[in-house]
Length: 155
Image (cartoon, rainbow, N blue to C red; front, side, top):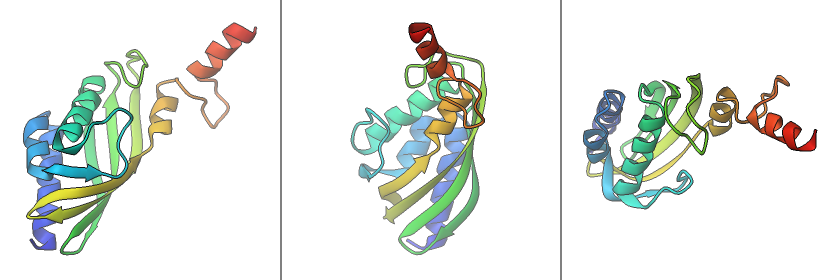
């Protein structure tokens, strides 16, 4: 496939995911046996692992929106930087819904074969998500949930 076709697949899959159509987006983008080199905690293998991850994400953040900021590609790979936004309305990594709005950055590199990702590397600012949910210390010094729990037990 050409780099233009791979970019088009990446964009189309993001549009489906943003619309809440996880199944179509995942089926378009990932090969059945796709390898995730940076899986989320507890993420299973292959396409079904990606499907499970995105369902978890969109359950926690029903209005999750992935906005590509920049893309570069060659005939086998697409790399893109993105912004992820959403409102915390479901459990995420053990944190009950807070109603907080999140906005974080991420980067993904996908290696394509036959128009689908067969291998993926990437990172989303999970520490930033946890800080914005109040579950991790804020670098500005504002205490997060972890600090409040420690304070409760250490008095």
